[in-house]
Length: 74
Image (cartoon, rainbow, N blue to C red):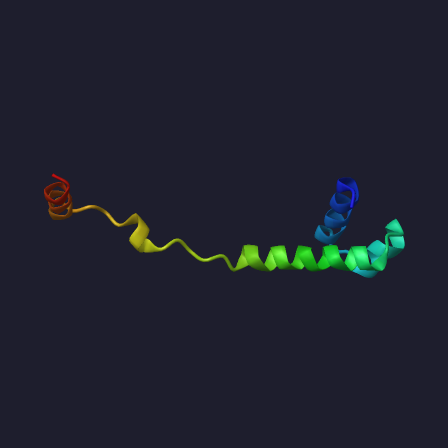
């Protein structure tokens, strides 16, 4: 599918148009529009439900932790 067509469809979906309206306006094949609609909804759902970053990944290093790591490395 051409990139311009896909961008036009996504712009229509962002504007609140239904797949039926997009099919009628652009005269695209039904299967193409519904496949892109499915991809668009999947993207929106995944973006809204992303996991938050684990707090343990950003844990602060204590002096005891640093000393223990240095002892094990050396």
